[in-house]
Image 1: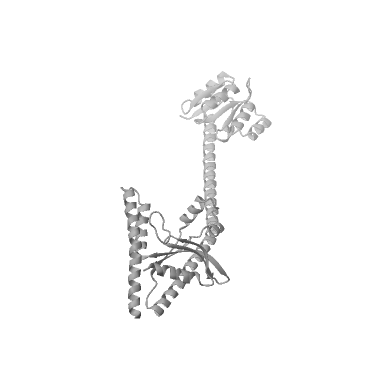
Image 2: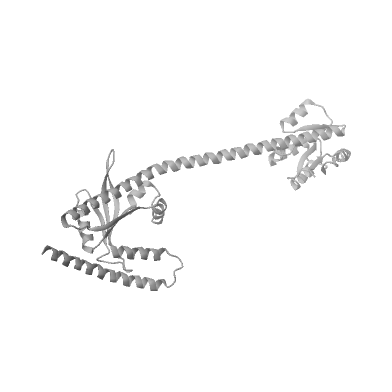
Length: 357
Protein backbone atom coordinates (compact mmCIF):
# COMPACT_ATOMS: atom_id res chain seq x y z
CA UNK A 1 0.00 0.00 0.00
CA UNK A 2 1.03 3.59 -0.55
CA UNK A 3 2.22 5.43 2.53
CA UNK A 4 0.87 8.78 3.77
CA UNK A 5 2.58 10.74 6.51
CA UNK A 6 0.22 12.64 8.83
CA UNK A 7 1.99 15.35 10.85
CA UNK A 8 -0.01 17.15 13.58
CA UNK A 9 0.69 17.91 17.24
CA UNK A 10 -2.99 17.25 18.04
CA UNK A 11 -3.50 13.53 18.55
CA UNK A 12 -7.22 13.82 17.79
CA UNK A 13 -6.51 15.24 14.33
CA UNK A 14 -4.01 12.50 13.61
CA UNK A 15 -6.42 9.78 14.67
CA UNK A 16 -9.32 11.21 12.69
CA UNK A 17 -7.28 11.45 9.51
CA UNK A 18 -5.80 7.99 10.04
CA UNK A 19 -9.28 6.50 10.44
CA UNK A 20 -10.50 8.19 7.24
CA UNK A 21 -7.53 7.04 5.14
CA UNK A 22 -6.43 3.70 6.63
CA UNK A 23 -8.61 1.66 4.27
CA UNK A 24 -6.76 2.96 1.19
CA UNK A 25 -3.31 3.92 2.50
CA UNK A 26 -0.69 2.88 5.01
CA UNK A 27 -0.66 5.69 7.58
CA UNK A 28 2.52 6.94 9.25
CA UNK A 29 2.12 9.58 11.99
CA UNK A 30 4.33 12.25 13.54
CA UNK A 31 3.53 14.73 16.34
CA UNK A 32 6.06 17.45 15.44
CA UNK A 33 8.27 18.66 12.64
CA UNK A 34 11.45 16.90 13.74
CA UNK A 35 9.65 13.58 13.98
CA UNK A 36 8.07 14.19 10.56
CA UNK A 37 11.43 14.64 8.87
CA UNK A 38 12.73 11.52 10.59
CA UNK A 39 9.76 9.44 9.34
CA UNK A 40 10.18 10.85 5.87
CA UNK A 41 13.86 9.91 5.83
CA UNK A 42 12.94 6.35 6.85
CA UNK A 43 10.46 5.91 3.99
CA UNK A 44 11.46 8.26 1.16
CA UNK A 45 10.51 5.97 -1.71
CA UNK A 46 7.00 4.81 -0.85
CA UNK A 47 5.65 7.98 0.81
CA UNK A 48 3.14 9.41 -1.66
CA UNK A 49 1.78 12.40 0.33
CA UNK A 50 2.38 14.43 3.50
CA UNK A 51 -0.48 15.98 5.51
CA UNK A 52 1.20 18.74 7.49
CA UNK A 53 0.05 21.02 10.30
CA UNK A 54 1.60 24.46 10.35
CA UNK A 55 1.51 25.23 14.10
CA UNK A 56 3.69 22.67 15.94
CA UNK A 57 6.32 22.67 18.72
CA UNK A 58 10.06 22.13 18.10
CA UNK A 59 9.81 22.64 14.31
CA UNK A 60 6.76 24.20 12.66
CA UNK A 61 5.27 23.31 9.27
CA UNK A 62 7.02 26.13 7.36
CA UNK A 63 10.41 24.86 8.60
CA UNK A 64 9.51 21.30 7.58
CA UNK A 65 8.60 22.52 4.08
CA UNK A 66 11.90 24.41 3.85
CA UNK A 67 13.90 21.28 4.72
CA UNK A 68 11.81 19.14 2.37
CA UNK A 69 12.57 21.59 -0.44
CA UNK A 70 16.27 21.46 0.38
CA UNK A 71 16.22 17.65 0.44
CA UNK A 72 14.37 17.40 -2.88
CA UNK A 73 11.21 15.86 -1.37
CA UNK A 74 8.92 18.67 -2.52
CA UNK A 75 9.67 17.84 -6.17
CA UNK A 76 8.13 14.36 -5.94
CA UNK A 77 5.87 14.26 -2.85
CA UNK A 78 2.76 16.44 -2.60
CA UNK A 79 2.26 18.32 0.69
CA UNK A 80 -1.26 19.16 1.87
CA UNK A 81 -1.60 21.62 4.77
CA UNK A 82 -3.89 20.73 7.70
CA UNK A 83 -5.50 24.06 8.47
CA UNK A 84 -8.35 25.53 10.41
CA UNK A 85 -7.59 29.01 9.18
CA UNK A 86 -8.91 30.60 6.01
CA UNK A 87 -6.42 33.50 5.86
CA UNK A 88 -5.58 34.22 2.22
CA UNK A 89 -2.05 35.38 3.00
CA UNK A 90 -1.22 32.07 4.71
CA UNK A 91 -2.52 30.03 1.77
CA UNK A 92 -0.62 32.19 -0.70
CA UNK A 93 2.60 31.79 1.30
CA UNK A 94 2.15 28.00 1.35
CA UNK A 95 1.43 27.80 -2.38
CA UNK A 96 4.51 29.89 -3.09
CA UNK A 97 6.55 27.37 -1.10
CA UNK A 98 5.25 24.54 -3.30
CA UNK A 99 2.36 23.18 -1.26
CA UNK A 100 -0.15 21.22 -3.37
CA UNK A 101 -3.43 21.77 -1.48
CA UNK A 102 -5.15 22.30 1.89
CA UNK A 103 -7.17 19.96 4.11
CA UNK A 104 -9.45 22.16 6.17
CA UNK A 105 -10.92 21.45 9.57
CA UNK A 106 -13.44 20.18 10.40
CA UNK A 107 -12.54 17.20 8.19
CA UNK A 108 -15.02 15.82 5.71
CA UNK A 109 -13.97 12.31 4.70
CA UNK A 110 -14.92 12.45 1.02
CA UNK A 111 -13.33 15.87 0.50
CA UNK A 112 -10.13 14.83 2.31
CA UNK A 113 -9.83 11.66 0.20
CA UNK A 114 -10.51 13.48 -3.06
CA UNK A 115 -8.01 16.23 -2.33
CA UNK A 116 -5.33 13.69 -1.42
CA UNK A 117 -6.10 11.48 -4.45
CA UNK A 118 -6.03 14.43 -6.80
CA UNK A 119 -2.74 15.68 -5.37
CA UNK A 120 -1.13 12.23 -5.66
CA UNK A 121 -2.35 11.69 -9.23
CA UNK A 122 -1.31 15.19 -10.25
CA UNK A 123 2.18 14.68 -8.85
CA UNK A 124 2.45 11.24 -10.46
CA UNK A 125 1.45 12.73 -13.79
CA UNK A 126 3.85 15.65 -13.32
CA UNK A 127 6.70 13.30 -12.41
CA UNK A 128 5.98 11.13 -15.46
CA UNK A 129 6.06 14.18 -17.69
CA UNK A 130 9.31 15.36 -16.11
CA UNK A 131 10.81 11.91 -16.54
CA UNK A 132 9.77 11.83 -20.19
CA UNK A 133 11.22 15.29 -20.71
CA UNK A 134 14.48 14.18 -19.06
CA UNK A 135 14.57 11.05 -21.21
CA UNK A 136 13.91 13.09 -24.33
CA UNK A 137 16.61 15.57 -23.33
CA UNK A 138 19.02 12.69 -22.73
CA UNK A 139 18.09 11.16 -26.09
CA UNK A 140 18.58 14.51 -27.83
CA UNK A 141 21.88 14.95 -26.01
CA UNK A 142 23.08 11.52 -27.15
CA UNK A 143 21.92 12.22 -30.71
CA UNK A 144 23.74 15.55 -30.64
CA UNK A 145 26.87 13.82 -29.38
CA UNK A 146 26.57 11.23 -32.14
CA UNK A 147 26.15 13.98 -34.73
CA UNK A 148 29.17 15.82 -33.32
CA UNK A 149 31.26 12.63 -33.39
CA UNK A 150 30.15 11.98 -36.96
CA UNK A 151 31.06 15.54 -37.93
CA UNK A 152 34.44 15.21 -36.25
CA UNK A 153 34.96 11.83 -37.90
CA UNK A 154 34.08 13.28 -41.29
CA UNK A 155 36.45 16.19 -40.71
CA UNK A 156 39.16 13.70 -39.78
CA UNK A 157 38.31 11.24 -42.56
CA UNK A 158 38.44 13.78 -45.38
CA UNK A 159 42.15 14.67 -44.99
CA UNK A 160 42.93 11.04 -44.11
CA UNK A 161 41.18 9.77 -47.24
CA UNK A 162 42.94 12.46 -49.24
CA UNK A 163 46.30 11.25 -47.92
CA UNK A 164 45.44 7.62 -48.72
CA UNK A 165 44.52 8.69 -52.26
CA UNK A 166 47.93 10.32 -52.59
CA UNK A 167 49.67 7.15 -51.37
CA UNK A 168 47.67 5.09 -53.89
CA UNK A 169 48.76 7.51 -56.59
CA UNK A 170 52.38 7.02 -55.50
CA UNK A 171 51.98 3.24 -55.73
CA UNK A 172 50.58 3.59 -59.26
CA UNK A 173 53.50 5.83 -60.16
CA UNK A 174 56.05 3.22 -59.03
CA UNK A 175 54.14 0.43 -60.78
CA UNK A 176 54.08 2.45 -63.99
CA UNK A 177 57.83 3.14 -63.85
CA UNK A 178 58.53 -0.55 -63.29
CA UNK A 179 56.14 -1.63 -66.04
CA UNK A 180 57.90 0.68 -68.49
CA UNK A 181 61.29 -0.76 -67.52
CA UNK A 182 59.92 -4.25 -67.91
CA UNK A 183 58.66 -3.42 -71.40
CA UNK A 184 62.02 -1.94 -72.34
CA UNK A 185 63.90 -5.03 -71.12
CA UNK A 186 61.54 -7.25 -73.06
CA UNK A 187 62.26 -5.23 -76.22
CA UNK A 188 66.02 -4.86 -75.77
CA UNK A 189 67.02 -8.13 -74.14
CA UNK A 190 64.10 -10.40 -74.99
CA UNK A 191 63.36 -11.14 -71.34
CA UNK A 192 61.56 -9.62 -68.37
CA UNK A 193 63.44 -8.50 -65.25
CA UNK A 194 60.55 -9.25 -62.92
CA UNK A 195 57.73 -11.76 -62.74
CA UNK A 196 55.10 -9.86 -60.76
CA UNK A 197 54.33 -6.68 -58.84
CA UNK A 198 52.26 -6.68 -55.66
CA UNK A 199 51.15 -3.57 -53.83
CA UNK A 200 49.46 -2.79 -50.53
CA UNK A 201 48.24 0.21 -48.54
CA UNK A 202 48.37 -0.05 -44.75
CA UNK A 203 44.96 -0.22 -43.06
CA UNK A 204 43.90 2.70 -40.82
CA UNK A 205 44.05 0.41 -37.77
CA UNK A 206 47.62 -0.63 -38.60
CA UNK A 207 48.65 2.99 -39.27
CA UNK A 208 47.31 4.36 -35.98
CA UNK A 209 48.57 1.37 -34.00
CA UNK A 210 52.09 1.99 -35.28
CA UNK A 211 51.91 5.72 -34.52
CA UNK A 212 50.69 4.99 -31.00
CA UNK A 213 53.33 2.32 -30.41
CA UNK A 214 56.06 4.75 -31.40
CA UNK A 215 54.60 7.62 -29.36
CA UNK A 216 53.71 9.85 -32.30
CA UNK A 217 50.54 12.01 -32.52
CA UNK A 218 47.54 10.32 -34.14
CA UNK A 219 47.10 12.91 -36.89
CA UNK A 220 47.26 13.00 -40.66
CA UNK A 221 50.37 15.18 -40.60
CA UNK A 222 52.00 12.72 -38.21
CA UNK A 223 51.36 9.89 -40.69
CA UNK A 224 53.03 11.85 -43.46
CA UNK A 225 56.00 12.89 -41.32
CA UNK A 226 56.71 9.75 -39.28
CA UNK A 227 55.75 6.69 -41.37
CA UNK A 228 57.57 5.57 -44.50
CA UNK A 229 55.82 2.25 -45.15
CA UNK A 230 52.17 3.28 -45.57
CA UNK A 231 52.45 2.61 -49.31
CA UNK A 232 54.26 -0.57 -50.27
CA UNK A 233 55.26 -2.21 -53.55
CA UNK A 234 56.76 -5.69 -53.78
CA UNK A 235 58.65 -6.65 -56.93
CA UNK A 236 59.16 -10.38 -57.56
CA UNK A 237 62.19 -11.08 -59.72
CA UNK A 238 63.58 -14.29 -61.17
CA UNK A 239 67.24 -13.67 -60.31
CA UNK A 240 69.24 -11.66 -57.75
CA UNK A 241 71.08 -9.56 -60.34
CA UNK A 242 67.73 -8.44 -61.80
CA UNK A 243 66.90 -7.04 -58.36
CA UNK A 244 69.95 -4.82 -58.24
CA UNK A 245 69.63 -3.82 -61.90
CA UNK A 246 65.98 -2.79 -61.48
CA UNK A 247 66.68 -0.95 -58.23
CA UNK A 248 69.54 0.94 -59.84
CA UNK A 249 67.43 1.98 -62.83
CA UNK A 250 64.49 3.01 -60.65
CA UNK A 251 66.59 5.09 -58.23
CA UNK A 252 68.51 6.58 -61.15
CA UNK A 253 65.44 8.38 -62.48
CA UNK A 254 65.97 12.07 -61.84
CA UNK A 255 62.68 12.75 -60.03
CA UNK A 256 62.88 9.77 -57.64
CA UNK A 257 64.89 10.11 -54.46
CA UNK A 258 66.42 7.32 -52.38
CA UNK A 259 65.61 8.03 -48.72
CA UNK A 260 66.89 4.81 -47.17
CA UNK A 261 68.17 1.40 -48.28
CA UNK A 262 68.31 -1.89 -46.37
CA UNK A 263 69.99 -4.75 -48.19
CA UNK A 264 68.91 -8.02 -46.58
CA UNK A 265 70.23 -9.97 -49.56
CA UNK A 266 73.89 -9.15 -48.85
CA UNK A 267 73.16 -8.97 -45.12
CA UNK A 268 70.33 -11.43 -44.34
CA UNK A 269 68.32 -11.26 -41.12
CA UNK A 270 69.12 -13.92 -38.49
CA UNK A 271 66.06 -15.95 -39.51
CA UNK A 272 67.30 -16.13 -43.11
CA UNK A 273 65.10 -13.41 -44.61
CA UNK A 274 66.56 -11.94 -47.81
CA UNK A 275 65.20 -8.93 -49.65
CA UNK A 276 66.23 -5.48 -50.83
CA UNK A 277 64.22 -2.69 -49.19
CA UNK A 278 64.18 0.84 -50.58
CA UNK A 279 62.33 3.85 -49.17
CA UNK A 280 61.75 6.11 -52.15
CA UNK A 281 60.49 9.66 -52.51
CA UNK A 282 58.16 9.46 -55.51
CA UNK A 283 56.48 12.35 -57.33
CA UNK A 284 52.74 12.34 -57.93
CA UNK A 285 51.05 14.81 -60.26
CA UNK A 286 47.74 16.15 -58.96
CA UNK A 287 45.35 18.63 -60.56
CA UNK A 288 46.85 21.63 -58.77
CA UNK A 289 50.25 20.50 -57.56
CA UNK A 290 53.07 18.03 -57.61
CA UNK A 291 53.90 16.16 -54.40
CA UNK A 292 56.65 13.85 -53.21
CA UNK A 293 55.34 10.75 -51.42
CA UNK A 294 57.15 8.01 -49.49
CA UNK A 295 56.88 4.46 -50.89
CA UNK A 296 58.55 1.33 -49.58
CA UNK A 297 59.69 -0.92 -52.43
CA UNK A 298 60.81 -4.48 -51.70
CA UNK A 299 62.64 -6.65 -54.23
CA UNK A 300 62.66 -10.45 -53.79
CA UNK A 301 63.30 -13.50 -55.90
CA UNK A 302 60.42 -15.90 -56.59
CA UNK A 303 61.80 -18.49 -54.17
CA UNK A 304 62.41 -15.94 -51.41
CA UNK A 305 58.90 -14.53 -51.78
CA UNK A 306 57.47 -18.01 -51.26
CA UNK A 307 59.73 -18.44 -48.20
CA UNK A 308 58.70 -15.06 -46.75
CA UNK A 309 55.01 -15.93 -47.16
CA UNK A 310 55.46 -19.16 -45.20
CA UNK A 311 57.54 -17.44 -42.52
CA UNK A 312 54.88 -14.74 -42.13
CA UNK A 313 52.18 -17.36 -41.56
CA UNK A 314 54.28 -18.99 -38.85
CA UNK A 315 54.98 -15.65 -37.17
CA UNK A 316 51.30 -14.76 -36.79
CA UNK A 317 49.96 -18.28 -36.30
CA UNK A 318 48.86 -19.16 -32.76
CA UNK A 319 49.25 -22.49 -30.97
CA UNK A 320 51.93 -23.86 -33.31
CA UNK A 321 53.91 -26.74 -31.77
CA UNK A 322 57.68 -27.19 -32.21
CA UNK A 323 58.15 -23.54 -33.20
CA UNK A 324 61.92 -23.62 -32.62
CA UNK A 325 62.27 -26.64 -34.88
CA UNK A 326 60.22 -24.96 -37.63
CA UNK A 327 62.27 -21.76 -37.34
CA UNK A 328 65.43 -23.82 -37.76
CA UNK A 329 64.01 -25.55 -40.81
CA UNK A 330 63.03 -22.20 -42.32
CA UNK A 331 66.56 -20.87 -41.79
CA UNK A 332 67.97 -23.93 -43.53
CA UNK A 333 65.52 -23.45 -46.40
CA UNK A 334 66.52 -19.78 -46.73
CA UNK A 335 70.19 -20.78 -47.07
CA UNK A 336 69.28 -23.37 -49.68
CA UNK A 337 67.17 -20.82 -51.57
CA UNK A 338 70.13 -18.44 -51.73
CA UNK A 339 72.31 -21.14 -53.24
CA UNK A 340 69.51 -22.10 -55.66
CA UNK A 341 68.95 -18.48 -56.75
CA UNK A 342 72.59 -17.98 -57.64
CA UNK A 343 72.88 -21.41 -59.30
CA UNK A 344 69.85 -20.61 -61.47
CA UNK A 345 71.33 -17.19 -62.25
CA UNK A 346 74.59 -18.83 -63.31
CA UNK A 347 72.71 -21.25 -65.59
CA UNK A 348 70.81 -18.34 -67.15
CA UNK A 349 74.07 -16.47 -67.77
CA UNK A 350 75.54 -19.53 -69.51
CA UNK A 351 72.45 -19.89 -71.70
CA UNK A 352 72.54 -16.21 -72.68
CA UNK A 353 76.28 -16.46 -73.40
CA UNK A 354 75.76 -19.46 -75.68
CA UNK A 355 72.90 -17.65 -77.42
CA UNK A 356 75.11 -14.63 -78.20
CA UNK A 357 77.77 -16.87 -79.69
